[in-house]
Length: 256
Image (cartoon, rainbow, N blue to C red; front, side, top):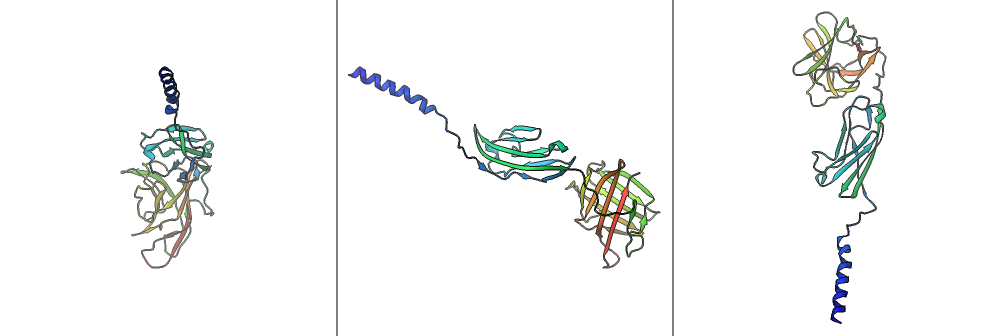
């Protein structure tokens, strides 16, 4: 009877071992989380930047999927909850997803749709190398006879259109001193860009001793016309250091 009892206990112990080693089952329903895109519509050549909320990001692995993307970023990565492609191609358009993984279990999921487009053209028609006239002499109403590009340290890229010795329309980008990517930029309302935002620029008109600065938030379109870099703006407001009169101009410049 005693031997029988020993064998029974041994059998029960052996049977219990696998049940103790069973892994915790994964939940069938993973949590839906937001997958943020810096821009859901991206101009070709500009970066695709995706991210999820950063809470507890250092505790999980992140599996990123999308067109041409199948990337597992471990929890030890500096930013596993962030995915960036520096230069988008048209084939990069589509659905992107991320799975937040705890061991073998998918804890969270998120998706976002990305569209890749050609750089848009300006929505107005302006004579090339010209700015429409305003109430201030020399600010608009000018055909620019010389268009040139140059760089300056720190790495700043300029396009300057001049008409005579005292009239100039200048576009300034702080982007590493190279020609800007094609796309739509926003004016920053300053005489020069601060370098914090690669999608900003400054636009100024110098006439005589005065400088007229495009106010913040107006769009400047950068495209190519017959292979040449082309910049244009439509109905943009400029500061007026001479009076309270409003200055609104459109302009179009193409590098030779």
